[in-house]
Image 1 (cartoon, helix red, strand yellow):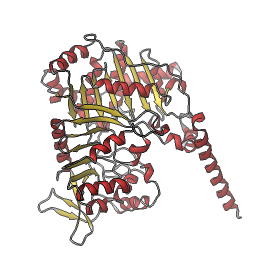
Image 2: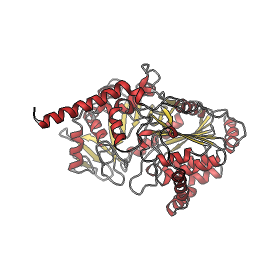
Image 3: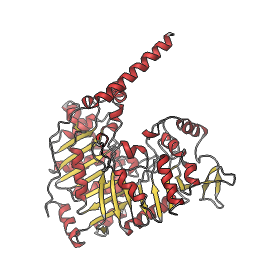
Image 4: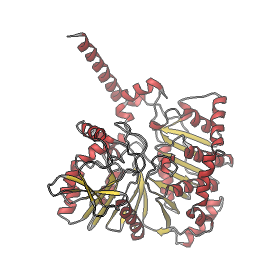
Length: 519
């Protein structure tokens, strides 16, 4: 055996040993939860401004739950900021990503100011995306009214050791918390697809996401609070203070940076845009009209999803039951769409045997921030088309570049929703891919209500329209093509639109790799 072969063999042996030790010892390598048990604070009839505003409104509408859809990023930011300003009891915030960028710091400041008023603030973040932010997190956690916990955390907080831990603990670290929830006083909840960051709130100078949240008022907010408590008190949630520490000077400097953000010209300009919003002004004039419904449910995966043999409580089962119960129409929106053989066959079966109209909107290659996901999706594109499924791919908005094999910021579509038979559906964090189904925890709002369905169906129509999407089809020779319907006559394109050779070649090569289960 040559020297190079021996080096390769030993390297492979070390890698296998690391993975095997991580698989066998995952529970012992994971930081242990040491946080005190806590639960949602009891509701009061008129203790806070939100109590006094929402309780009479709910009573006026027979105890139903109010819902407002938020497709606009500026309105989605405003819903979080204004609810934090009115909160007087608690803020429970749960996110996969909270970027340390201008809008992230502005919302962090809103939470800080609430804590200064005596509001209890609990923040639960997935630890995959906290790298480099420990100082800022610890500075907020040091406030007596704020506690921050991280989900399924790394012992090693940064540097090469974090990378090595990622390799060693791959089988356990691979499971992430993708939930998104902003709950104020247990009275109002903002749920849906948005993380915290400027690309989600129409504040990026490059590409902004097209996304969808909902605001809930009333009794069903209690379901969101119960889900939050379950995650917060699970063994997967570890206090950030148990993992790292910083000097008082570093913590004070981090808080000062967040406070200074609100005084910057860019922050002032953004907040002025928010204050000028017709939705915000309508709220202060008392003109907003939520839709009230008895048929809303907030649902989630269990906090320790990957450790459960019983999958009956997994969100994927509830969503699949709705989709495959379609009788006339199933309209699906998913930025990451990797249907696999089984889901592809079931969608085609809906069309062929039950004559259901099935449509899917996802990202085009140019708009997709994760080329590996597009590679997974493209393997099923022909089968879906031939089976009668209508496919629409969102045009790239802003930059059409992709940034690496496994992802980056900058995708244009981020909405995760579906509407079935013009009557029921879902809005939340769940992508139609293996990762959402089997690896990550997800949550969202299920509904059975024709008015909510009509609003979501209109959003589907808007996203799939000629101005925003290409329609995928076959040309007269049977080859895959993209129809640009914004032109008259429509233009037929025979290559992935708005892409170059390198992008197409990269996606094709990635498609050869056996990674679909991780997408």
